[in-house]
Image (tube, rainbow, N blue to C red; front, side, top):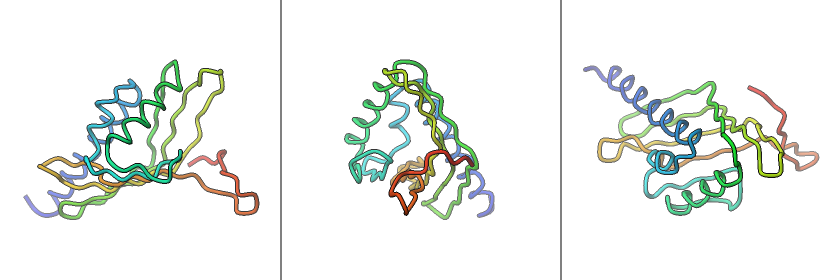
Length: 148
């Protein structure tokens, strides 16, 4: 297999990891979601704190997310781009979690997502992840109505 073939194969494997994670989100399957993260994960998510370090902290955050939505969760990933180089890779996309909270409020804003992968023990895992939304500098408020 050529280097280019290996990169394509690795990118396809990373895409499968992301797809399994998305299915885990939709099914509220915490173990499936957490299976895509390296044990020493560092995550900069859209909810406080500034960072989550390690999968134990991030597992707790996902449990809180799942408990906020009594009904189904939909999760979309669009414009996914994956770049592979050796045993590291990065991916970015626009993502949206859509669901209804306990109080009846619907959520479904798009966010920007970037993930850095490492190949650990033959498996591609997310070592660093960041999710963000744009901010209006004049008001200091998040801009939540943009669409990809």
